[in-house]
Figure 1 (cartoon, rainbow, N blue to C red):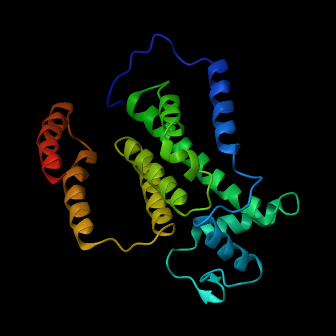
Figure 2: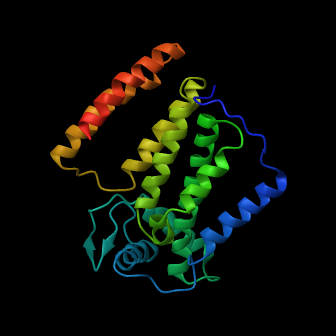
Length: 233
């Protein structure tokens, strides 16, 4: 079921799909390797990854001998594994940065799948193009930062929500995995005001994904909650 039924007179062809794949590959690969860690984020991130590779604690990585508790270690685990697998073909910092490409690839995949489910066949590529065209992603997606894992978790959750009315088990697994990745990817210390806003937003938008509603009921709920959301923002 599509939320918006598409009418596409020019469907994507295999040649276009190959060109899109090459474009995404070039975008992901450019700047991913071949340079020293960028300051300030990559410097301390690689310090944590290096401590893990040198036999440090995987649960509580250290930097300069001090435990680092600001962020969960999921991204650092994956980066350490990539660095170990890519060695000695790549320097450790370049190998670790492959984790950024890994999470960015998953983000593009799940954003494309969600767009395809929500807007119809031949719509996933458009979402991928929009994402790689975002200025904020140009540099950040090639850095060793934990936010990339968080973004992957959000994209996975979005795809799970898109499937929630048809494939409940798969949707639950995707949403649960996405939430888990999010909690294991970045610090969870929002301000009280942010918590209140997030709670209100969740109360408003959670009913949108309840099963068994007719199209007319969903449209009425969209009209009511749209005004409430604008009031919060």
